[in-house]
Length: 536
Image (cartoon, rainbow, N blue to C red; front, side, top):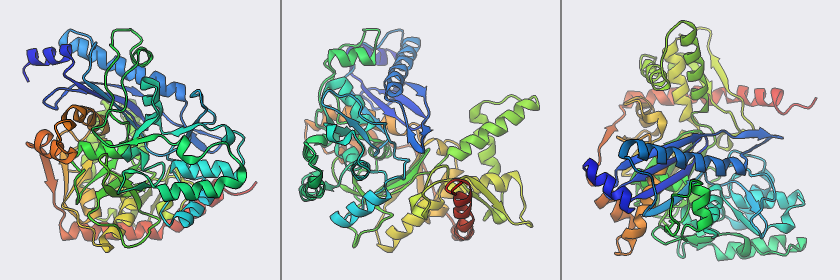
């Protein structure tokens, strides 16, 4: 679009806004009718470890959404000379899973627990056996049942449980509704109805009946909606919350709030059967849309849903790029002490490119990026650790290459299961900030997966752009077009992407790295036991 056309569509509200509450930033992305990004805004935030549990303050979520929207509005004003007053559609997304319990008035009853927590081993195991369906540690139902088992005093007073995206959506619309993708990380979904599994709901009610709670599980879970369904409109209070300046008009339709997995699928055109994507950030996870059910239950494979309700095999790893971020900050500070000035993007680019000079298998330099527990490799708590053989070439290149290979290590374990299940994947797409440096992380991921990996030109935009597309789909769905067709034929028909096909030698080298990584896990477990879980 020409500049004048962009100004016109912003002024007339021919736009869609996606806001995603990620693990380290809350980002807002505004797109036009041609699906391109018009402006964006962001707010940085961090989780905290409180009494051994990872959490965020809800007031920080609200103020962060406001700050992100304000940053977006200021960008619009600088670029186009106008402020945002009317928006065509809005969608809220956020980190999936976790536990957010509210009373009847919407007041918080207990600390918000994120996906990163691994305190639900007993609850998740019992529910998995009851449902004959894998219930991961981070799912909302596991957190609720763990609270039941621990007889936490807030449980009888629960009127609603939701996710971070669901909470912000409620504050904007007054409705407890949720997209099927985000909902599938709370409680199992029936693929035939695209709603919570009725039989499992009954099983859960029977399980907790002896406690005499005044609620049933159906009453406290949100309403489940598929992509393209209106999930409410922006109330006056919601408009004031989002934009305290008062310029934003209420009445804007909102898409069903989604999880970051669903928005990642939308942003990478990976919602159709036999497509998949890998999202790399604070956590790393793969999503593969299934054409048939898996033959059996796997504890390392989560069955979730696309925003339109198709079953997805998800391999979720709690630990992603946090350690790389920490080391890049350290190297940036060292450069400053030497008198060199470099912005963050340059530091990442230089260190990532240096990794390409390392040995194929990092020559025995092995990194463990586990800041938090990692169920895929049996860790209930995490402790970052570097191991190397005395004869290893301990170079900056091997160090950074090992860091990047470590990001994919736990993911590779789960993906082997899908390979054994003969799950077919026509296209695997990577997205997230780690892919911004061309041809580096993409190359290692392809070697780890043993398959070609594509990265789109806008790989760093990720979830908030995907949420903006899901909001935009509200107006398209009325014509009967499926989400798959909307993305494939409208949004990504002229997709700009690069594909890396790993060589047999690269795949073999990564397998050698992974073997060393797994052999050294005994040291990681011992360190966790000695330093984090040992009794005084």
